[in-house]
Length: 202
Length: 202
DNA sequence: CTTTAAATATGACTAGGGTCATGTATGACT
DNA sequence: AGTCATACATGACCCTAGTCATATTTAAAG
Image 1 (tube, each protein chain N blue to C red):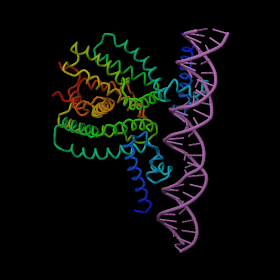
Image 2 (cartoon, each protein chain N blue to C red):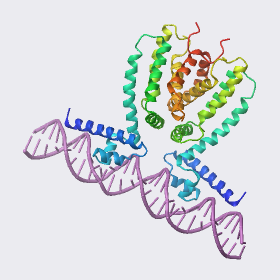
Image 3 (cartoon, rainbow over the protein chains, first blue to last red):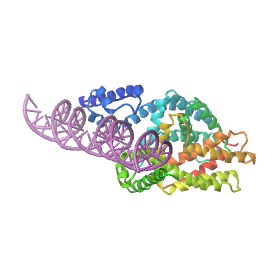
Image 4 (cartoon, rainbow over the protein chains, first blue to last red):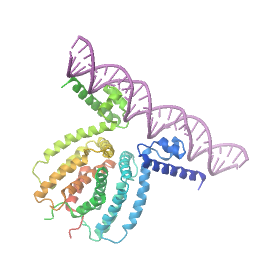
């Protein structure tokens, strides 16, 4: 690895460390790019060589965190278990990991959405969280259909999207709520409902 | 009505009209508060007497539009019809009304979310779209349970939230998509699925 | 018609995100 | 080692949302 590459990595991770500390201390909005660069010992312009906007830095936090979580969980869902349980476990674990730091999650989710919302106008891949989640769920459901645990006349993609929808909606409701209700429990109940259906089975 | 009140209303609606025109012409981000106030014939500071931030103005657009739509639709759902059909009609009508102006909807939804996300930190009422939608759906489902059309052991609130979740997720997926798929049709299919359930009925 | 207090309007000013022309370090090639 | 092209760093500068001390307008009271 060349000296240049080393320095690039070094600088990027210094920005990452310093901003992480500052965000925790003072919050995202109250931390200026100036402060970050001063503490990191670089010029302001340099920051924008690494992250196109201040929000992009926040997204980077989200990506790092997601990487950890998804890897952790993808393994776990390889275990043998009924499809519904696997899906539930997967989502509930995700939920629990977010429950650990509500404030950071708030920032990540709301800024991320905004960012994706706009950048979605441009062409390019949908790197959004929801798409990734949908894909994983789709695969799990497919196995479920093969085993006869999941109705085989449903559209897999639609079902995966519905599950994703419920997951994110619960997450957002939880983030907005001030009372301390459990995101993971709320979600668990809703997943049951999805498998059962809302309509009366006479 | 006093002269003061008249002027206030006059000024607010001038801001509203001018900004509406400018947003359509040049987009939200590319329209500055300076431009708006110049065209409206007021000083910059005055703008902020009426709207605390530029985004608040956008939210005001959203509220105005929602008011129209919800009133229109709330009446329509008073008709006699099966619960599922009523819910479907309601949501599909909503969907269609958004389909008419995708760009504006994009702005409203993504900015609104961001705004609510942050302001949700403060105490106070949840004036969010999703909450309102949930309430309407909850009432519709209640009638359904009374008529035996909807399973009576489901938690009404949970069910309403699940429907809301699917509605918003579809909306957002549609907004992010570049290909022209129909939001209202996609939604319609998902509502069917929710009533049926994902699990196999053996 | 004055006086006076409160509401509203004003625009110079501040703050912070983001740009860009210029300077400097790096490494490939001779 | 010396030359050169290219990648990267720099900080003065720009732009625009939002603030605030001051000025003006309204309306109520005397």
